[in-house]
Every structure is written in structure tokens, then in C-alpha cells.
Amino acid sequence: MQSALQNSYKLLKHKNRLTIGYFGGSITCGGSAKHIIEKGRKVPEKQGTIADSYVNRTSAWIKKLFPNAEIETVNAGVSDTHTQLGLYRLEGTLMNTNGHNMPDLVFIEFTSNDWVYGEHTVQIIKAELESLIINIRKINPFADIVIIATNTLEMQNCPKKLAHKEIADYYSLPFIDVGAALQNAKETDPESAHTESGEKGTLKYTVDDLHPSALGYAVYLEEIKKVLSPHLDGENCGHGIIDHTKSAPTPLSKELYIPRIIDVDDITAPADAEIAQKPLCVQLHGTLLDDIYHYHVVKNCIVLKQNETITAEFAGGVLGILVAMQSKTDVGILYRIDGGEWLEFSINDSQLGFQRYPHTQAFFLKAGLSKGKHTVTLKSVAEKPLIFGAFLAQ
Image (tube, rainbow, N blue to C red; front, side, top):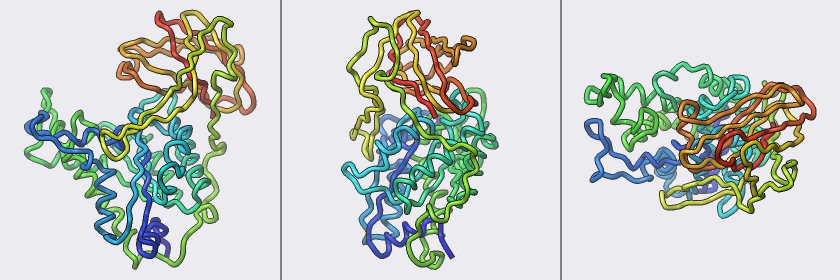
């Protein structure tokens, strides 16, 4: 009998080592773990630490199970990012040996962010997650993978969350719905705080009804332990190390995504356009809040003024953009593909207003394009310049 974590168990038991990689958004970053919530408010004088995040708690639990093993933790969580951008940064921020061993066990946590970005349909989410799993194992065929699902109450039965579960089940990966466990804790705790609207269970286990407090991350860990404990029991593990690429099922998606970055070097811009020698980066916190790392997604960018246009050719069925968001600054663009009608994409207070803070972000523009080559033209229409890094094609 094979276990979903058979390779991890064998490394822990017989090699006394394991490198665990965590790949996801802000919940994986773990910054909210420092908050202690009492009576519906943060208590500044009572501070937790990032050691209370699910990343560090999970690694510590596995270390407790295998005290002789050296557990290496690689936290590749980047706040406000989804599976699409994850595909583009997978090798650069996680599946590498830059200062650590190649991850043997990978936790993927993108459910919440996959629900809110543009044309992130159920079909696209399935294709992207499947592509991510295949790309992880293309780099390390022996990597075990676990899918973590987070959610708020209204997302409990969200079809997009179920898309993650469908892919996990198809590839026989553990699927841990920590979000459901957290919601259950909030609903059944008689001392759980109430919001001003009277809704139960908002501020004790979470800081904003999604990001866990220190107590909420403790609930996460218990659910993780419940699901993974049988897989780390030697009685449930077969013999030998498994090459997952040799036992992988036929992909469900008709077209798996190959990330293609069309950066400044391959974009036609106005002759007087400002090419800023400034990389667009994503920020990682590692396993400590003061461990800040920056990964360069692209090396420079175009400062696109109002009514200026850029053009590029790409191949793929999905198109997105990589931009540098600025504090409280609107983004407004028009774009058209293959000379078609002009379409609009905006970021303001009513549309993705929570994105208006300084960071690098990827957004969908169009999905469902035919196979083959396409041409995209983009025009900035916002008053302030758009810091444009790349087109993202899949």
C-alpha cells in the first residue's frame, strides 16, 4: 500500500531529513499569526510571533514526530498572489537549491486568492493547479504535495474551492480544508466575538474573517495533523521511493499552461517611452517576520503615460499583465487582441480597491483564446503613469 506522503516518511525515517516548501499567499506568509484577539479586538500588549503560523507550526509538529530528523522549512508565500503568478515564480522562489535543499514536500495554498481575480474560472483554476503540480514534479519527480484550502463562511461551498479538491483527489493528494475547520471553531465557540452586524465568530480566530490569528492558526494545525498523521505512520507506507511522474494519471485539462513572460525586451513601445531599469519584485518573508527577500519577476519596466500604447505578440490561451501597483493610485487600461474591440480593465475603489497599495501584482485580461499566436495592444488611460512590467501568457 502506498501513502500520499510515502517519500516524505522514508526521508524522515531513514535519511533523518526533510525539506518542506510552502507555496501560497498571505496566509502562508503568516504575518497575521502575531495577533492575539480578545473580545473582538487586537491586544497590542499580547503579541504572538510568526512561529504561530501554520507553516512554522506544521514544520515543528513534524519535527516532534521525528526528533532525529533535520527539518528545513522554505516559506515561499507571497501576499495577494494566486496560482497564475505562482506558475511564473515557482522555480525562482521555491523549487530550487538557492540556499536550501530541493523541497521534498510541498504545501500549496492559493484557494482564497484564486476566487477573486478576474477571469479565474473553475476551468482555469483546474488547469493552473494541475499545471503547477506537474511543474513541481517536473523539477522534483519525488516531491509529495498537499493542497491547503482556506475560505470564509460564504465561500464554504464555492465551486472554485471544489475545483482544488477535484484536482487533489484526481492526483491522490491530501486535501486539507483548514478553512472549514476554522469556520466550525468560530461557529461552535460560545465565547467567539460578534461583529457590529451581529454575525458570530468573526474576531477571535481571525483578524478580518479570513486571515487567522494565532488562535486560528492553532485550529489549522489540528486539522493538518488529523489529515496527515495517517500518512506519516510507517504502517501505512509501502516500500521504496515513488517517482510520481511514472504513476501520474493522464491530465484532466486539455491544455496545460506553460508560463511565458513577454517583458520589455519583446514589447513595442513609443520611441520616447521611459524604460526604467527597475525590477518588479515579489516579497517573501521566510520563516521570520524580519526575514524579507525579494524575487525579481522582471528586470525592468515601462513607465506608460496616459494615452500611450504598447504592442506585443504572444502565444497561449490566457493573457495577463504584470504591473507595479502604487499607493492609492487607480489603474485604467484599454486593450484589444488581434485587432478586435477595445476592452477595459480598471482598478479603483469600486473595482479591486484593496489592491491600491505598493506591490507587484498580476491580473488576468483575457481567457479562452484560440491556440496559436496573437497580438495584443494596450493603452493606458489613467491620469497617473502605469508602471508596466510584462504581459503574462499561458
